[in-house]
Amino acid sequence: MASEILAPEITVEVLQQTAGKLGVKVPQNVEHDFAELMRGTREAILAVAAMEDFVPPADLDKYPRTDVVHPPPEHNPYNAWATKATVIGAKEGILSGKTLVLKDNICLAGVPCEFGTKVFSDWVPNTDATVVKRILDAGVTITGKATCENFCAYGASNTSAHGPVGNPYDKTRSSGGSSSGCGVLVAIGEVDMAIGADQGGSIRMPASQVGIVGLKPTFGLVPYTGIISSETSIDHAGPMTRDILTNAQLLKVIAGVDGLDDRQIAGTPFPNQVPDYPALLARAKSAHALLSIAEQGTGPFPGNPRKLRVGILKEGFTFQELDPHVASLVKEAAKKFEELGAEVIEISVPGHSQAVLVGRVHRLTQYNNLLGRTSGTRQIYQTDLTQEILPWTQEKFDKLWYVSAGLLLQGQYCDEYYPYLHGKTHNLVRKLRYEYDDALSKVDVLLMPTLPWVAKKLLGQDVSPSEHMKDYSGFNTNTVPFNMTGHPALSIPCGMLPPPEGPEDLRLPVGLQLVGKYHDELTLYKAALAWSDAYDWKTL
Ligand SMILES: NC(=O)c1ccccc1
Image (tube, rainbow, N blue to C red; front, side):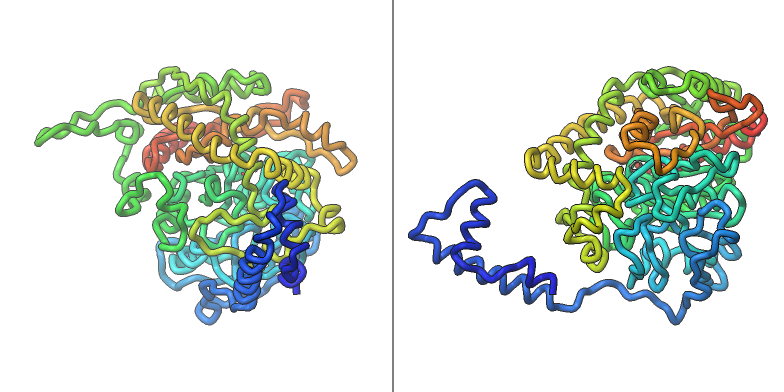
Protein backbone atom coordinates (compact mmCIF):
# COMPACT_ATOMS: atom_id res chain seq x y z
CA MET A 1 0.00 0.00 0.00
CA ALA A 2 1.28 3.44 -0.98
CA SER A 3 0.76 4.87 2.51
CA GLU A 4 3.19 2.32 3.99
CA ILE A 5 5.86 3.24 1.48
CA LEU A 6 5.31 6.94 2.13
CA ALA A 7 5.14 6.61 5.91
CA PRO A 8 8.21 4.55 6.79
CA GLU A 9 8.62 2.96 10.21
CA ILE A 10 10.10 5.53 12.58
CA THR A 11 13.69 4.95 13.62
CA VAL A 12 16.24 7.46 14.85
CA GLU A 13 17.69 7.43 11.31
CA VAL A 14 14.33 8.30 9.74
CA LEU A 15 13.90 11.05 12.34
CA GLN A 16 17.29 12.55 11.51
CA GLN A 17 16.65 12.24 7.74
CA THR A 18 13.46 14.23 8.23
CA ALA A 19 15.34 16.86 10.24
CA GLY A 20 18.01 16.88 7.56
CA LYS A 21 15.48 18.02 4.97
CA LEU A 22 15.09 21.15 7.11
CA GLY A 23 18.87 21.49 7.33
CA VAL A 24 18.92 20.73 11.08
CA LYS A 25 19.83 17.91 13.45
CA VAL A 26 17.77 16.74 16.44
CA PRO A 27 19.94 16.87 19.62
CA GLN A 28 20.86 13.38 20.75
CA ASN A 29 19.32 13.65 24.22
CA VAL A 30 15.81 14.17 22.77
CA GLU A 31 16.06 11.89 19.72
CA HIS A 32 13.96 9.20 21.39
CA ASP A 33 11.26 11.63 22.53
CA PHE A 34 10.84 13.03 19.04
CA ALA A 35 10.87 9.56 17.50
CA GLU A 36 8.07 8.63 19.92
CA LEU A 37 6.07 11.69 18.84
CA MET A 38 6.49 10.75 15.18
CA ARG A 39 5.48 7.16 15.82
CA GLY A 40 2.17 8.45 17.14
CA THR A 41 1.75 10.59 14.03
CA ARG A 42 2.57 7.66 11.78
CA GLU A 43 -0.06 5.56 13.49
CA ALA A 44 -2.62 8.30 12.99
CA ILE A 45 -1.64 8.61 9.31
CA LEU A 46 -2.06 4.89 8.73
CA ALA A 47 -5.38 4.85 10.58
CA VAL A 48 -6.76 7.75 8.48
CA ALA A 49 -5.41 6.15 5.28
CA ALA A 50 -7.34 2.98 6.16
CA MET A 51 -10.63 4.78 6.85
CA GLU A 52 -13.29 4.84 4.18
CA ASP A 53 -13.42 8.22 2.42
CA PHE A 54 -16.57 10.30 2.69
CA VAL A 55 -17.94 12.03 -0.40
CA PRO A 56 -21.54 12.85 -1.34
CA PRO A 57 -22.98 9.91 -3.34
CA ALA A 58 -24.52 10.53 -6.76
CA ASP A 59 -28.17 9.63 -7.33
CA LEU A 60 -27.61 7.06 -10.08
CA ASP A 61 -31.12 5.61 -9.75
CA LYS A 62 -32.82 8.92 -10.33
CA TYR A 63 -30.39 10.05 -13.05
CA PRO A 64 -28.79 6.95 -14.64
CA ARG A 65 -25.73 7.31 -16.89
CA THR A 66 -26.20 5.59 -20.24
CA ASP A 67 -24.56 5.39 -23.70
CA VAL A 68 -21.10 6.06 -22.28
CA VAL A 69 -18.60 5.94 -25.17
CA HIS A 70 -15.40 7.50 -26.39
CA PRO A 71 -16.59 8.46 -29.85
CA PRO A 72 -14.46 7.24 -32.77
CA PRO A 73 -12.81 9.95 -34.93
CA GLU A 74 -15.59 9.88 -37.55
CA HIS A 75 -18.06 10.92 -34.84
CA ASN A 76 -15.69 13.42 -33.32
CA PRO A 77 -14.57 15.68 -36.17
CA TYR A 78 -13.21 18.45 -33.94
CA ASN A 79 -11.90 16.16 -31.21
CA ALA A 80 -14.14 18.19 -28.92
CA TRP A 81 -15.77 15.21 -27.21
CA ALA A 82 -13.78 13.47 -24.49
CA THR A 83 -16.64 11.06 -23.69
CA LYS A 84 -20.21 10.95 -24.87
CA ALA A 85 -22.90 9.93 -22.36
CA THR A 86 -26.56 10.49 -21.74
CA VAL A 87 -27.94 11.65 -18.39
CA ILE A 88 -31.54 12.79 -18.58
CA GLY A 89 -32.57 15.40 -16.03
CA ALA A 90 -35.88 16.06 -14.29
CA LYS A 91 -39.00 16.09 -16.47
CA GLU A 92 -39.81 19.69 -15.64
CA GLY A 93 -37.48 22.51 -14.93
CA ILE A 94 -36.47 25.88 -16.25
CA LEU A 95 -33.85 24.32 -18.53
CA SER A 96 -35.89 21.33 -19.64
CA GLY A 97 -35.29 20.21 -23.22
CA LYS A 98 -31.83 21.80 -23.28
CA THR A 99 -28.63 19.83 -23.82
CA LEU A 100 -25.37 20.50 -22.01
CA VAL A 101 -21.79 19.29 -22.04
CA LEU A 102 -19.38 19.42 -19.08
CA LYS A 103 -15.71 20.32 -19.25
CA ASP A 104 -13.77 17.13 -18.59
CA ASN A 105 -12.59 18.27 -15.17
CA ILE A 106 -16.12 18.31 -13.73
CA CYS A 107 -17.12 15.13 -11.91
CA LEU A 108 -19.98 13.17 -13.41
CA ALA A 109 -20.16 9.95 -11.40
CA GLY A 110 -19.89 6.79 -13.43
CA VAL A 111 -18.45 8.51 -16.48
CA PRO A 112 -14.68 8.54 -17.11
CA CYS A 113 -12.80 11.80 -16.54
CA GLU A 114 -9.58 12.33 -18.49
CA PHE A 115 -8.59 15.86 -17.46
CA GLY A 116 -6.75 16.14 -20.80
CA THR A 117 -3.98 13.78 -19.69
CA LYS A 118 -2.72 10.23 -20.03
CA VAL A 119 -0.83 10.41 -16.71
CA PHE A 120 -3.68 8.32 -15.34
CA SER A 121 -6.37 6.47 -17.26
CA ASP A 122 -9.81 5.10 -16.53
CA TRP A 123 -10.40 7.35 -13.57
CA VAL A 124 -14.14 7.36 -12.95
CA PRO A 125 -15.38 9.90 -10.39
CA ASN A 126 -17.58 8.55 -7.60
CA THR A 127 -19.49 11.79 -7.03
CA ASP A 128 -21.42 14.43 -8.96
CA ALA A 129 -20.33 18.06 -8.87
CA THR A 130 -22.92 20.36 -7.29
CA VAL A 131 -23.41 22.04 -10.68
CA VAL A 132 -24.29 18.62 -12.13
CA LYS A 133 -26.98 18.02 -9.51
CA ARG A 134 -28.41 21.49 -10.07
CA ILE A 135 -28.66 21.26 -13.86
CA LEU A 136 -30.22 17.78 -13.72
CA ASP A 137 -32.82 19.02 -11.25
CA ALA A 138 -33.48 21.92 -13.67
CA GLY A 139 -34.30 19.49 -16.51
CA VAL A 140 -31.09 19.54 -18.55
CA THR A 141 -29.96 16.51 -20.56
CA ILE A 142 -26.20 16.05 -20.18
CA THR A 143 -24.76 14.67 -23.42
CA GLY A 144 -21.18 14.13 -22.29
CA LYS A 145 -17.79 15.48 -21.32
CA ALA A 146 -15.90 17.95 -23.51
CA THR A 147 -12.16 17.76 -24.16
CA CYS A 148 -10.15 19.94 -21.80
CA GLU A 149 -6.51 20.85 -22.18
CA ASN A 150 -3.74 19.03 -20.33
CA PHE A 151 -4.40 19.49 -16.59
CA CYS A 152 -6.51 22.54 -17.57
CA ALA A 153 -3.24 24.37 -17.91
CA TYR A 154 -3.17 26.06 -21.29
CA GLY A 155 -4.96 28.65 -23.40
CA ALA A 156 -4.50 26.98 -26.79
CA SER A 157 -6.16 23.77 -27.92
CA ASN A 158 -3.25 21.53 -28.86
CA THR A 159 -2.33 20.17 -25.42
CA SER A 160 -4.95 17.55 -24.64
CA ALA A 161 -3.81 13.92 -24.59
CA HIS A 162 -6.76 13.47 -26.90
CA GLY A 163 -5.17 15.49 -29.68
CA PRO A 164 -5.80 19.02 -30.93
CA VAL A 165 -9.28 20.57 -30.89
CA GLY A 166 -9.75 22.40 -34.20
CA ASN A 167 -11.48 25.77 -34.50
CA PRO A 168 -14.83 25.62 -36.38
CA TYR A 169 -13.83 28.70 -38.44
CA ASP A 170 -10.60 27.03 -39.56
CA LYS A 171 -9.73 23.56 -38.33
CA THR A 172 -6.01 24.25 -38.52
CA ARG A 173 -6.34 26.94 -35.83
CA SER A 174 -6.68 26.93 -32.06
CA SER A 175 -10.14 27.04 -30.51
CA GLY A 176 -8.66 28.43 -27.28
CA GLY A 177 -8.37 26.64 -23.97
CA SER A 178 -8.53 25.13 -21.62
CA SER A 179 -12.33 24.60 -21.97
CA SER A 180 -11.66 23.98 -25.67
CA GLY A 181 -14.20 21.20 -26.32
CA CYS A 182 -16.95 23.17 -24.53
CA GLY A 183 -16.35 26.17 -26.78
CA VAL A 184 -16.42 24.15 -29.99
CA LEU A 185 -19.47 22.00 -29.15
CA VAL A 186 -21.47 25.10 -28.24
CA ALA A 187 -20.23 27.04 -31.29
CA ILE A 188 -21.17 24.33 -33.80
CA GLY A 189 -24.60 23.83 -32.19
CA GLU A 190 -23.96 20.28 -31.04
CA VAL A 191 -25.18 21.30 -27.57
CA ASP A 192 -27.12 24.28 -26.24
CA MET A 193 -24.82 25.03 -23.34
CA ALA A 194 -21.62 24.04 -21.59
CA ILE A 195 -20.17 24.43 -18.12
CA GLY A 196 -16.49 25.35 -18.27
CA ALA A 197 -13.88 26.10 -15.65
CA ASP A 198 -11.47 29.03 -15.53
CA GLN A 199 -8.28 29.61 -13.49
CA GLY A 200 -6.59 32.01 -15.89
CA GLY A 201 -9.03 32.54 -18.73
CA SER A 202 -10.10 29.00 -19.60
CA ILE A 203 -13.78 29.85 -20.12
CA ARG A 204 -13.25 33.25 -21.72
CA MET A 205 -10.40 32.37 -24.08
CA PRO A 206 -12.22 29.61 -25.99
CA ALA A 207 -15.38 31.75 -25.95
CA SER A 208 -13.37 34.51 -27.59
CA GLN A 209 -11.74 32.28 -30.22
CA VAL A 210 -14.90 30.48 -31.36
CA GLY A 211 -17.39 33.37 -31.08
CA ILE A 212 -19.59 32.44 -28.13
CA VAL A 213 -20.55 33.92 -24.74
CA GLY A 214 -18.47 32.83 -21.74
CA LEU A 215 -18.81 34.02 -18.16
CA LYS A 216 -16.30 33.66 -15.35
CA PRO A 217 -18.63 34.53 -12.47
CA THR A 218 -17.65 36.32 -9.27
CA PHE A 219 -15.33 34.12 -7.20
CA GLY A 220 -17.47 31.79 -5.12
CA LEU A 221 -20.83 32.49 -6.79
CA VAL A 222 -20.88 29.06 -8.43
CA PRO A 223 -19.81 26.23 -6.10
CA TYR A 224 -16.65 24.45 -7.23
CA THR A 225 -17.61 21.29 -5.35
CA GLY A 226 -16.76 18.15 -7.33
CA ILE A 227 -14.61 19.93 -9.90
CA ILE A 228 -10.86 19.28 -10.15
CA SER A 229 -9.09 22.20 -8.50
CA SER A 230 -5.99 23.90 -9.81
CA GLU A 231 -5.62 26.35 -6.91
CA THR A 232 -8.47 27.06 -4.56
CA SER A 233 -8.27 30.86 -4.71
CA ILE A 234 -8.46 31.09 -8.52
CA ASP A 235 -10.88 28.22 -9.32
CA HIS A 236 -14.08 29.32 -11.07
CA ALA A 237 -16.80 27.44 -12.98
CA GLY A 238 -19.25 29.15 -15.32
CA PRO A 239 -21.65 29.05 -18.27
CA MET A 240 -20.72 28.99 -21.98
CA THR A 241 -23.55 29.57 -24.47
CA ARG A 242 -24.32 31.08 -27.87
CA ASP A 243 -26.46 33.91 -26.47
CA ILE A 244 -26.68 36.09 -23.38
CA LEU A 245 -30.12 35.04 -22.14
CA THR A 246 -29.30 31.34 -22.13
CA ASN A 247 -26.09 32.19 -20.30
CA ALA A 248 -28.11 34.04 -17.65
CA GLN A 249 -30.55 31.13 -17.33
CA LEU A 250 -27.76 28.65 -16.76
CA LEU A 251 -26.03 30.92 -14.26
CA LYS A 252 -29.25 31.26 -12.27
CA VAL A 253 -29.45 27.47 -12.00
CA ILE A 254 -25.84 26.79 -11.00
CA ALA A 255 -25.22 29.80 -8.72
CA GLY A 256 -25.61 29.88 -4.95
CA VAL A 257 -24.12 28.45 -1.77
CA ASP A 258 -24.01 24.66 -1.46
CA GLY A 259 -22.64 24.54 2.07
CA LEU A 260 -19.67 22.44 0.98
CA ASP A 261 -17.25 24.88 -0.59
CA ASP A 262 -15.14 27.41 1.33
CA ARG A 263 -14.58 29.44 -1.82
CA GLN A 264 -18.11 30.71 -1.42
CA ILE A 265 -17.36 32.53 1.82
CA ALA A 266 -13.78 33.49 1.07
CA GLY A 267 -13.79 37.25 0.78
CA THR A 268 -16.47 38.47 -1.61
CA PRO A 269 -19.63 39.52 0.25
CA PHE A 270 -22.27 37.03 -0.85
CA PRO A 271 -25.82 38.04 -1.84
CA ASN A 272 -28.54 36.50 0.33
CA GLN A 273 -30.31 35.32 -2.76
CA VAL A 274 -29.13 34.66 -6.30
CA PRO A 275 -30.79 37.31 -8.52
CA ASP A 276 -33.26 36.05 -11.14
CA TYR A 277 -31.01 37.23 -13.99
CA PRO A 278 -33.23 36.11 -16.91
CA ALA A 279 -36.39 37.63 -15.42
CA LEU A 280 -34.61 40.90 -14.68
CA LEU A 281 -33.21 41.03 -18.20
CA ALA A 282 -36.58 40.26 -19.76
CA ARG A 283 -38.10 43.20 -17.88
CA ALA A 284 -35.89 45.74 -19.67
CA LYS A 285 -37.47 46.08 -23.09
CA SER A 286 -34.98 48.39 -24.81
CA ALA A 287 -31.30 49.18 -25.03
CA HIS A 288 -32.08 52.42 -23.20
CA ALA A 289 -33.65 50.51 -20.34
CA LEU A 290 -30.84 47.97 -20.25
CA LEU A 291 -28.23 50.70 -20.17
CA SER A 292 -29.66 52.82 -17.40
CA ILE A 293 -28.78 52.35 -13.80
CA ALA A 294 -31.00 53.27 -10.88
CA GLU A 295 -28.66 55.32 -8.67
CA GLN A 296 -29.19 54.52 -5.00
CA GLY A 297 -31.01 57.42 -3.38
CA THR A 298 -30.65 58.39 0.26
CA GLY A 299 -33.29 58.17 2.97
CA PRO A 300 -36.82 58.05 1.61
CA PHE A 301 -35.81 59.49 -1.78
CA PRO A 302 -35.27 57.00 -4.55
CA GLY A 303 -32.37 57.79 -6.86
CA ASN A 304 -32.61 58.98 -10.43
CA PRO A 305 -31.85 56.69 -13.31
CA ARG A 306 -28.57 57.47 -15.02
CA LYS A 307 -26.61 56.19 -18.00
CA LEU A 308 -24.49 53.07 -17.62
CA ARG A 309 -20.80 53.99 -17.52
CA VAL A 310 -18.42 51.90 -19.58
CA GLY A 311 -14.73 52.29 -18.76
CA ILE A 312 -12.23 51.44 -21.49
CA LEU A 313 -9.37 49.96 -19.45
CA LYS A 314 -6.25 51.77 -20.66
CA GLU A 315 -3.78 49.05 -19.63
CA GLY A 316 -5.95 46.42 -21.31
CA PHE A 317 -4.97 47.98 -24.65
CA THR A 318 -1.34 48.95 -24.16
CA PHE A 319 0.60 45.69 -23.88
CA GLN A 320 2.96 44.91 -26.73
CA GLU A 321 1.57 41.51 -27.75
CA LEU A 322 -1.87 42.97 -28.51
CA ASP A 323 -2.68 42.81 -32.24
CA PRO A 324 -3.47 46.44 -33.23
CA HIS A 325 -6.37 45.28 -35.39
CA VAL A 326 -7.95 43.54 -32.41
CA ALA A 327 -7.36 46.69 -30.34
CA SER A 328 -9.12 48.96 -32.83
CA LEU A 329 -12.00 46.59 -33.43
CA VAL A 330 -12.67 46.29 -29.69
CA LYS A 331 -12.43 50.10 -29.30
CA GLU A 332 -14.97 50.54 -32.10
CA ALA A 333 -17.24 48.05 -30.38
CA ALA A 334 -16.85 50.08 -27.18
CA LYS A 335 -17.86 53.30 -28.97
CA LYS A 336 -21.08 51.60 -30.04
CA PHE A 337 -22.11 51.60 -26.39
CA GLU A 338 -22.28 55.39 -26.75
CA GLU A 339 -24.69 55.08 -29.69
CA LEU A 340 -26.84 52.85 -27.50
CA GLY A 341 -27.06 55.43 -24.74
CA ALA A 342 -24.21 54.56 -22.38
CA GLU A 343 -21.39 56.86 -21.30
CA VAL A 344 -17.96 55.68 -22.44
CA ILE A 345 -14.73 56.97 -20.86
CA GLU A 346 -11.14 55.77 -20.63
CA ILE A 347 -9.92 54.68 -17.21
CA SER A 348 -6.51 53.60 -15.91
CA VAL A 349 -5.61 50.81 -13.45
CA PRO A 350 -1.79 50.83 -13.35
CA GLY A 351 -1.63 47.55 -11.39
CA HIS A 352 -3.20 45.71 -14.33
CA SER A 353 0.17 45.71 -16.11
CA GLN A 354 1.88 43.90 -13.21
CA ALA A 355 -0.90 41.43 -12.52
CA VAL A 356 0.33 38.58 -14.73
CA LEU A 357 3.73 38.69 -13.03
CA VAL A 358 2.08 38.38 -9.62
CA GLY A 359 -0.17 35.68 -11.07
CA ARG A 360 2.75 33.63 -12.24
CA VAL A 361 4.23 33.35 -8.76
CA HIS A 362 0.77 33.03 -7.19
CA ARG A 363 -0.16 29.94 -9.19
CA LEU A 364 3.25 28.32 -9.16
CA THR A 365 3.53 28.42 -5.42
CA GLN A 366 0.30 26.47 -4.99
CA TYR A 367 -0.68 24.30 -7.94
CA ASN A 368 -2.68 21.74 -6.01
CA ASN A 369 -3.56 19.20 -8.63
CA LEU A 370 0.01 18.64 -9.82
CA LEU A 371 1.74 18.69 -6.48
CA GLY A 372 -1.07 17.01 -4.58
CA ARG A 373 -1.24 19.83 -2.08
CA THR A 374 -4.29 20.59 -0.09
CA SER A 375 -4.91 24.11 0.97
CA GLY A 376 -6.82 23.89 4.24
CA THR A 377 -9.94 24.83 2.33
CA ARG A 378 -13.11 23.07 3.43
CA GLN A 379 -14.37 21.38 0.29
CA ILE A 380 -14.95 17.96 -1.23
CA TYR A 381 -11.53 16.60 -2.25
CA GLN A 382 -10.97 14.18 -5.11
CA THR A 383 -8.55 12.10 -3.03
CA ASP A 384 -8.88 9.12 -5.37
CA LEU A 385 -7.59 11.33 -8.19
CA THR A 386 -4.68 12.63 -6.11
CA GLN A 387 -3.66 9.04 -5.52
CA GLU A 388 -3.65 8.44 -9.27
CA ILE A 389 -1.34 11.42 -9.80
CA LEU A 390 1.02 11.00 -6.83
CA PRO A 391 3.72 9.98 -6.37
CA TRP A 392 5.35 11.30 -9.52
CA THR A 393 7.35 8.73 -11.47
CA GLN A 394 9.47 9.09 -14.59
CA GLU A 395 6.82 7.25 -16.57
CA LYS A 396 4.10 9.67 -15.52
CA PHE A 397 6.35 12.68 -15.96
CA ASP A 398 7.09 11.59 -19.53
CA LYS A 399 3.36 11.59 -20.28
CA LEU A 400 2.90 15.24 -19.28
CA TRP A 401 2.50 17.91 -21.93
CA TYR A 402 5.47 20.24 -21.52
CA VAL A 403 3.37 23.07 -20.05
CA SER A 404 2.16 20.83 -17.22
CA ALA A 405 5.64 19.38 -16.75
CA GLY A 406 6.92 22.96 -16.55
CA LEU A 407 4.31 23.87 -13.95
CA LEU A 408 5.32 20.87 -11.87
CA LEU A 409 9.02 21.75 -12.02
CA GLN A 410 8.51 25.43 -11.37
CA GLY A 411 6.11 24.63 -8.55
CA GLN A 412 8.65 22.34 -6.93
CA TYR A 413 11.32 25.03 -7.29
CA CYS A 414 9.11 27.71 -5.74
CA ASP A 415 8.14 25.34 -2.96
CA GLU A 416 11.74 24.70 -2.07
CA TYR A 417 13.00 28.27 -2.14
CA TYR A 418 10.09 30.70 -1.93
CA PRO A 419 7.03 29.16 -0.26
CA TYR A 420 6.30 32.40 1.64
CA LEU A 421 5.76 34.21 -1.66
CA HIS A 422 2.34 32.62 -2.04
CA GLY A 423 1.23 34.65 0.95
CA LYS A 424 2.81 37.77 -0.43
CA THR A 425 1.02 37.36 -3.76
CA HIS A 426 -2.29 37.20 -1.88
CA ASN A 427 -1.43 40.51 -0.22
CA LEU A 428 -0.52 42.05 -3.58
CA VAL A 429 -3.73 40.70 -5.13
CA ARG A 430 -5.69 42.48 -2.40
CA LYS A 431 -3.98 45.72 -3.41
CA LEU A 432 -4.87 45.02 -7.05
CA ARG A 433 -8.46 44.31 -6.05
CA TYR A 434 -8.73 47.75 -4.40
CA GLU A 435 -7.38 49.36 -7.59
CA TYR A 436 -10.07 47.72 -9.73
CA ASP A 437 -12.71 48.45 -7.07
CA ASP A 438 -11.70 52.10 -7.18
CA ALA A 439 -12.09 52.15 -10.99
CA LEU A 440 -15.41 50.32 -10.61
CA SER A 441 -16.65 53.05 -8.28
CA LYS A 442 -16.29 55.47 -11.21
CA VAL A 443 -17.63 53.20 -13.97
CA ASP A 444 -20.07 50.28 -13.95
CA VAL A 445 -18.04 47.99 -16.20
CA LEU A 446 -14.46 47.80 -17.47
CA LEU A 447 -13.98 46.91 -21.12
CA MET A 448 -10.98 45.34 -22.91
CA PRO A 449 -10.16 42.63 -25.46
CA THR A 450 -10.43 39.11 -24.00
CA LEU A 451 -7.44 37.71 -25.92
CA PRO A 452 -4.83 39.81 -27.73
CA TRP A 453 -5.36 38.03 -31.05
CA VAL A 454 -7.73 36.00 -33.23
CA ALA A 455 -7.22 32.22 -33.32
CA LYS A 456 -3.63 31.28 -34.16
CA LYS A 457 -2.46 28.26 -36.12
CA LEU A 458 -2.26 25.11 -34.01
CA LEU A 459 1.36 24.17 -33.41
CA GLY A 460 2.35 20.55 -33.93
CA GLN A 461 3.98 18.12 -31.52
CA ASP A 462 7.30 18.70 -33.29
CA VAL A 463 7.45 22.35 -32.26
CA SER A 464 9.77 23.04 -29.31
CA PRO A 465 8.48 24.26 -25.93
CA SER A 466 10.37 27.55 -26.40
CA GLU A 467 8.65 28.26 -29.70
CA HIS A 468 5.27 27.55 -28.10
CA MET A 469 6.00 29.92 -25.27
CA LYS A 470 7.12 32.67 -27.64
CA ASP A 471 3.93 32.24 -29.64
CA TYR A 472 1.74 32.62 -26.56
CA SER A 473 3.56 35.33 -24.65
CA GLY A 474 1.04 37.89 -23.31
CA PHE A 475 -1.99 35.67 -23.93
CA ASN A 476 -3.44 35.94 -20.41
CA THR A 477 -2.79 39.63 -19.71
CA ASN A 478 -6.49 40.51 -19.61
CA THR A 479 -7.87 37.32 -18.11
CA VAL A 480 -5.56 36.21 -15.25
CA PRO A 481 -6.02 39.34 -13.09
CA PHE A 482 -9.71 38.64 -12.53
CA ASN A 483 -9.13 35.05 -11.48
CA MET A 484 -7.00 36.42 -8.68
CA THR A 485 -9.23 39.35 -7.68
CA GLY A 486 -12.46 37.43 -8.28
CA HIS A 487 -14.32 40.15 -10.23
CA PRO A 488 -16.92 38.75 -12.67
CA ALA A 489 -15.77 38.79 -16.31
CA LEU A 490 -17.86 38.13 -19.42
CA SER A 491 -16.53 37.54 -22.92
CA ILE A 492 -18.82 38.22 -25.88
CA PRO A 493 -18.05 38.17 -29.60
CA CYS A 494 -17.83 41.73 -30.99
CA GLY A 495 -16.73 41.34 -34.61
CA MET A 496 -14.50 39.38 -36.95
CA LEU A 497 -11.05 39.90 -38.43
CA PRO A 498 -8.74 38.12 -40.83
CA PRO A 499 -5.63 36.67 -39.16
CA PRO A 500 -2.69 39.12 -39.46
CA GLU A 501 -0.78 36.72 -41.71
CA GLY A 502 -3.81 36.16 -43.93
CA PRO A 503 -5.61 34.86 -45.86
CA GLU A 504 -7.55 38.14 -46.27
CA ASP A 505 -10.87 36.39 -46.89
CA LEU A 506 -10.80 34.30 -43.69
CA ARG A 507 -12.81 35.85 -40.87
CA LEU A 508 -12.23 34.86 -37.23
CA PRO A 509 -14.15 35.94 -34.10
CA VAL A 510 -12.86 38.64 -31.74
CA GLY A 511 -13.84 38.63 -28.06
CA LEU A 512 -14.66 41.65 -25.92
CA GLN A 513 -14.42 41.32 -22.14
CA LEU A 514 -16.60 43.19 -19.66
CA VAL A 515 -15.57 43.16 -16.00
CA GLY A 516 -17.90 44.23 -13.20
CA LYS A 517 -18.24 44.74 -9.48
CA TYR A 518 -18.45 41.71 -7.23
CA HIS A 519 -21.75 39.86 -7.73
CA ASP A 520 -22.90 42.33 -10.36
CA GLU A 521 -23.25 39.78 -13.16
CA LEU A 522 -26.60 41.39 -13.96
CA THR A 523 -24.96 44.62 -15.16
CA LEU A 524 -22.54 42.65 -17.35
CA TYR A 525 -25.48 40.79 -18.88
CA LYS A 526 -27.47 44.01 -19.38
CA ALA A 527 -24.62 45.71 -21.20
CA ALA A 528 -23.89 42.63 -23.30
CA LEU A 529 -27.55 42.10 -24.17
CA ALA A 530 -28.07 45.70 -25.25
CA TRP A 531 -24.99 45.46 -27.47
CA SER A 532 -25.76 42.07 -28.96
CA ASP A 533 -29.42 42.99 -29.62
CA ALA A 534 -28.26 46.01 -31.62
CA TYR A 535 -25.35 44.62 -33.64
CA ASP A 536 -24.64 41.47 -35.58
CA TRP A 537 -21.01 40.73 -34.74
CA LYS A 538 -20.58 38.54 -37.82
CA THR A 539 -21.19 41.49 -40.14
CA LEU A 540 -19.14 44.13 -38.32
N1 LIG B 1 -7.16 26.98 -16.29
C1 LIG B 1 -6.97 28.17 -16.85
O1 LIG B 1 -7.83 29.02 -16.79
C2 LIG B 1 -5.67 28.47 -17.53
C3 LIG B 1 -5.70 29.20 -18.70
C4 LIG B 1 -4.52 29.51 -19.34
C5 LIG B 1 -3.32 29.07 -18.82
C6 LIG B 1 -3.30 28.33 -17.64
C7 LIG B 1 -4.49 28.02 -17.00
